[in-house]
Image (cartoon, rainbow, N blue to C red; front, side, top):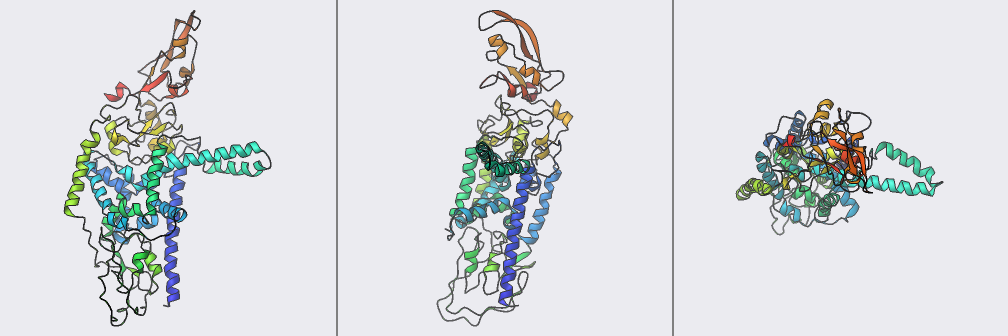
Length: 559
């Protein structure tokens, strides 16, 4: 096989990998967009598909002794493929990895790696150990670091609402300009409205914090390629541990004695032991002639080159680590000599993965010690009185131990009422969902949040069961309620109460109005035994600022 044919073949594999990356990224975005009410009570798309294949979420779910969720066991399929193909997920599938590759191309000029990620890449293994060590104590924080949750949460809270806001404002400006601008703008706006724009305008809490965290991950690309994947990602660490035993291995096992191009091309720094910067061997004065090679999956045919040429002794070539390799195949495409390939071999040398016994023990200890430290003085023991959880998620301890902070429930909420928590549930409650009725109530005929939750933190309830589930109890602030404080009639809260019989009724009594006159007024009264705490009354209350009727955590929920 000629060098020309080999070059075309190797570059084809690289383009296939890039095409696969783009396909899975677009699939991720498509499922993200489909997580929305579209006139049907049942979602037709498996919008949580990527989370079903996440072994890190499965591991944390099992270690927290959470109830069985059949959908999560699909993650074992990707674990099995990793035993065969290696850490392919990070290079071929992961949407966050694709996002980082794209951001690097768009935002930063090409430059050599600084070597920081190679020195810190043990960190992802220590983070993984600490997260899994705390899970048996029901402290489940993997969702804060899981790349799928991180990307989905950022899209839901920051970029999707910003995109919708920008399109709406641009469309309004062009509409005011009138023809001929509207001849173009209106068809485009209508197309976007029917395809990618949300059902209603979206506003979420914590957009600045969410954007800063994501921006830091992107900014790290300025230091080293795939810095997040090499040094921090716990899912990548889990796949790396499995990939050490994969059947698909690179040949040759180490850098060629006369060449170091592979080390320069590798964006994962996969040459050398974990925690060490790979050593690029010095080039000999006259490189040996190329050896015929059969492409991907072929074998080296004999030794390369003639007898060593005189010169300084060469350093020991750095070995290839399958735990770090994500099968980007750039070394295959960049090798002008035709020496690099990948083959299936049961018995193949493996680069050592020395994490250090003391460091591993320290990571375990950090995970265990984090449990009381995170919960020390936590409000999760007695949650804030206005911390209302989505339907079926009223057991606070269960929510905190099962939620992966992915943001799917927030994205799919019909009224935009489900919002991320900051510290209202303690440190471990960060980014868990809560219902803020002033922003959006829990629609009586909707159970979408339970349909999309991949771990059952928000259980999938039948609509009839969901409609009877108590989230809290509405209480009236008589100092702000219009009939009580002004002696003027107001029927809004009773009119919008969705339960039957109504949880809000009226008692007629004489009240002084603003002129000091006694007037018979219908005063609203909440029947706690009927109220389910949906927050519809609080959402529509016409009083400015905080509503005159607010939903609090019910005693029936706490008992």
